[in-house]
Amino acid sequence: MNLITPVVSRPGLGYLQHGTGPECVMVLHDWLGDHTNYAALLPYLDDTAFTYVFADLRGYGRSLHLSGAYTVDEITADCLALADQLGWPRFHIVGHSMTGMATQRIAADAPSRIKSAIAVCPVSAAGNRLSDDARAFFASTTVDDDALRRLVRFVTGGLSARWAELKLRQNRERVAPACRLAYLDMLTGTNFVDDIRGLDTRYLVIVGDKDPGLDEAAMHATFLAWHPNARLLNIPNCGHYPMQECPPYFATIVEDFLRDAAA
Image 1 (cartoon, rainbow, N blue to C red):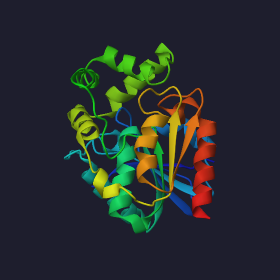
Image 2: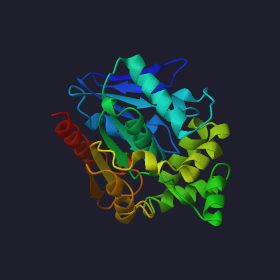
Image 3: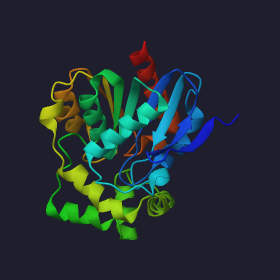
Image 4: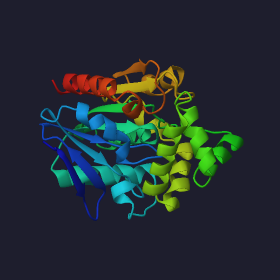
């Protein structure tokens, strides 16, 4: 049985729905890819216990046609509007990398609606401050194919050239050029730490031990320092994309946490 339901919500965010369970989970993607980052994960998800909605931000995937300000406040408003459209008064939120900070903004702005949050290899509410050279390199990946190949191999412990080609093709086909630098500005320049410090949302923070920079030390200085109900899990032999690098294990730890949070 195919439980993957492709849906496009206009004028709101496009999304892909998977499952029909009572626990509702909204899942967000990273800077480089759209909801298809999670394609390898779908066979391992419990589609009777959970309803997953994999949302595409403006300029990505099923929202490729949507322009905007490309800010964390806009992401928050769009996600809450999508939850309203879906009829979800309360839900769990999952963010990856760039959208780790979005889980914090959403939980701060609508704390009564968020049952729990999962932040995967996340950039926090403090933003990911980069040196001028590093910022220039990240910016170059928006147009330089070889730079993007180097980036995705670097953050995954040197996975294969074939892996890099897949990620490159996904980015170039499914991310609008107009939004790429704007979202980079958001993830490097945003800071709303004062708004989320002490927020008691139940958090699972996941990192991979081959993801440089967004490691355990970075999480202890950010998410675990600010959120009293946060805990950290470090996946061995995994980089920045656990949903693609180790999907069965990633599904297990995510759903174990969600079940516990829903109990």
